[in-house]
Amino acid sequence: MNKFDLQNTAQNIVKSIRSDPLDLYPIEHCHRSPVKWAGKIAMVKHPNNKQAHFVGLQTCKKWHCPVCAAHLMAIRSNEIQTMITRHMKADSGNTIIMLTITTPHCRRDSLVDLLKLQDSSIAWMKNQKSKKINTYKDLMTEIESVGELFVREVVWSNRSGWNPHRHVLLFCKYQTDSDLEKLQKELTELFIKAYRKQGGKIPKISDFRQHSIKLTQYSGDNAHTRYIARYLSKSAFTYFPSNNGSMTPFALLESSRHDNEKSMQYAALYLEFFNLQRLSMVRASPGLKKKFGIVDKTDTEAIEQSISDKMVYIDDITPYMSTILKHRLFGKIRQYSATMKPAEMLAMIKKYEYAA
Ligand SMILES: [Zn+2]
Image (cartoon, rainbow, N blue to C red; front, side, top):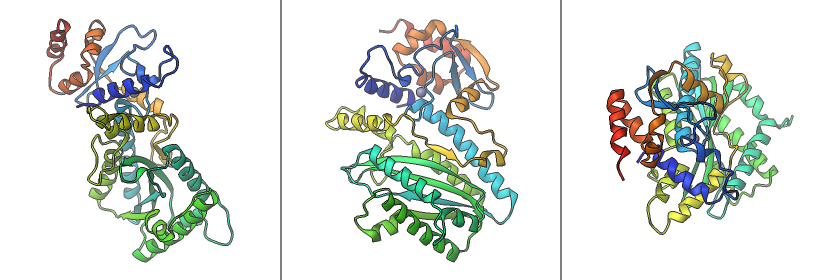
């Protein structure tokens, strides 16, 4: 099981909903079609990285693609870790608070509706300018937040359907337990107001108060901050159901590969996620990255530059492309490239050339 196999499954699933036989989705070209005018397809390696990459092949750079999402998440989680480290080092009173925002959800709800309501409620909460109560901006000023960054997590479970939620990292000053409690209360009341304004129904207010807004403070401990970056990057894209049975879109893809009565249902659920073409999964508030000396790049720029930066040429694989695609060798090549020499890898590919 590797991300290229998973990508192949995704490509087969999206093919089934395409109306025009010639108008392929970008994910269908990803690691399959050569870049126009590129000429060669080559295997390259980053000196710090053990595994090979491929240049000259199209990549879709989308979060719904198992191959590109893993690449994007690796880039973003590196950035997050750098930002956290720099923030913590800048002042001993600095801290990171993780704000988790969840909204009510059940099996009947479609993912797109849940996200629309959640996103518009959060936007309303952040922009409202009431003079009567503390606004979101007031609260952020109180904790001396210099900015925030969110990681979106989208999971599905058989029991409660889709559960999209956000983990927001607040780059701020250390808060005492009572300050934190007060912040939690005020944010919760603000969010209740926002959610109702956007047409959200709250079946049980005590549940909403208990679950919708959660705050966790990570103090100066390094292990803690490393944990956040790792937690965020892993939890969003694991291939397996978690202990409580919730599944990421890629766990749904993986489960759809198994031939059982639920395979069609899992494929349909993955498509719900796939159809959210422009969903941003990781985003920092304006100017925050710059503050920590990180160049703000779009997902497309981030992937393009990470491949073109300092890559070392290994070998031309253009002549073997049909063999590689036929036997789906990308995953194997990447796996072996960590330990094999280029000549051994080419020999490995060649072995498949005459295989059935
Ligand atoms: Zn891709």
